[in-house]
Each structure stands twice: as structure tokens, then as C-alpha cells.
Amino acid sequence: MEKRQLGQSSLHVYPITFGGNVFGWTANEAASFKLLDGFVGAGFNFIDSADVYSRWHPGNKGGESEEIIGNWLKARGGRDKVVIATKLGMDMGPGMKGLSRKYMMEAVEASLRRLKTDYIDLYQSHRDDPETPLEETLSAYADLIKAGKVREIGASNYSAPRLAEALKLSAEKGLPRYQSLQPLYSLVERQEFEGALEDVCLKEKVGVIGFYSLASGFLTGKYRSKADMEGRTRGPRVEKYINDYGFGVIAALDDVAKRYNAKPGQIAMAWLMARPSVTAPIASATNGEQLAELLKSADIQLDAAAIQQIDAASKPR
Image 1 (tube, rainbow, N blue to C red):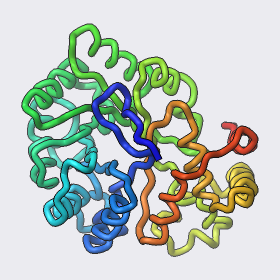
Image 2: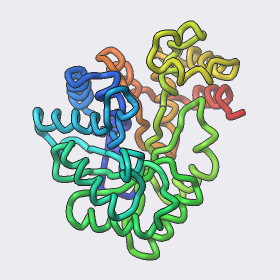
Image 3: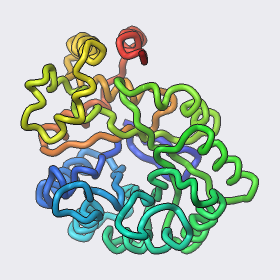
């Protein structure tokens, strides 16, 4: 398992990113510590979070994921052995959203405090802010990098034109460039990324760390009917895949998995890792068994026939 360079940045990561959206939501602090210990103990190093995780959960206010990661870093040490990514820009309450310089300076301090660290390895714009000029946002990032609070920057949920515009501005003005993109990308959600957005990332050497890599668990094969969704936290999110197209993708994954003595979700992750544009897809786990299964996918090298079979079954419709 080799490290991959994230875009043109100074960051080198192993090919799976652990999604910290589960921390403080479907995994409490004790469970989260075990997951982080297992992930890093297995030789991986890239952990992604956001200030807004997990504000959607009843009783939470946002920042829970970062706080758990910060407590784990304080308890375990080894800050230089991990790559910590987080995001800003989503609504955190009245007057707390967007990518204006003023808010960015406030948001970074809050994230650093929660993460209990002096710097963020990869600080990402969680979504585009059309009300703030790109130059203002990138200039603020430049100041954060100069101050040593941020190492590299990335974007999430950007369109191809806006990402291209930001990269062009960075080159023209000598400002930091987005070294990564975090798009929605999985075998059953290919249309949003593939095409113009992927073309920009390949042309400009922007690393890709797609989210919902397993389509909220659908690609693991555990949701094979509407009955399987009942009582599950992520059940409502996978309902849109419960159709002939979704089941066709699962059938292809099942078939390839048999040949590789693997699980469907492992094959889905291996397919993503084989894409030339993808650096380290994001996936989450809520227990040790799920984590072990996830991490084994990094060792699977799909042959051309397997990739072709999966491509054909998952071709966007």
C-alpha cells in the first residue's frame, strides 16, 4: 500500500479517507476512539471532518466530530503521523456560514480549538459561496497558511466552472490553489462528477476525495429490499437506489466479489481507487468489523475485465 500525493500539495495520504461524519452521531466518543485507533493502527493516516458534523443530530450543535478527533489526538499523541482535514462554510447558526474573510478567521479558530491542534493539514471550503468573491476567500486562505494555521486547501461541492475559475485566479494572483475536490461520487452517483468536473481535476492535477463512496451503505449489499431499510439510521438515504438500476450494480459487485473472495463494498471501493482521478475515497464505519472490511479494500487490484463489468452495470442513466 503506497501513499498518494494529494493534488500538487505537500500532503501524502494512504488510499482511503476515514469519514468523520459518524463521530458524535452514530458512533459515540468511546466507539470513535476505537475506530480511529484501528484505522491508524492499520497504517492509514487521512481523517476527514467538518465543523458542521453532526449538527443534524438531535441535541447536537455542530463541532462534535472535531471535538472527538481533538480529544483523541490529545489522548494518543502522534499529531504528525496523521493528516487531518476539516471543512467550513455550512450553516453553523446565525451569522456563521459562508466564505467571507471575517467568518473564515472566526471559523478556523473554532475548529483549531475543537481539534486541539495548532494547524489543519487540509482546510476545505465545504461548498461554494457565490456571495463572496473567490479572491477574498483565497486571500484569506493565504493569510491562514502564512500564519501556519493551515497547510493546504481544498474545495467540496464545487461545480466545474467555479473550480476552474478558482484555479485560474490562484495561478494569476499567486494565491493558494485548491489541491483537492470533495464531490459526491460512487458507483450509483457517477453523473455529478464524471464529465466536466473530473476533466478539470485531471487537467489541473486536483486530488479527488469523493464522499458517500458506498452510497450510505447501499453498495455493501445490506439493502436488497425496502424491508432492509426499516429501523436503520441511513435507511431513508438509500431508498432512491432501491430499483432495477441499483440492484443491477449490486449484482455486478456480487459477481466480481466472488472472483476476488471479497465483499461487494470492498469491490465498490476498489473500483473508486482504480480511477485515475481519485486519490483517496471517503468512507465511514461504525464498528470494528465494518472498519476491517473497509480497509481490506485497499489491497484489491481489479483487473480490466472486472472494471469493465462494473462500468457497464453502473453507467449513468
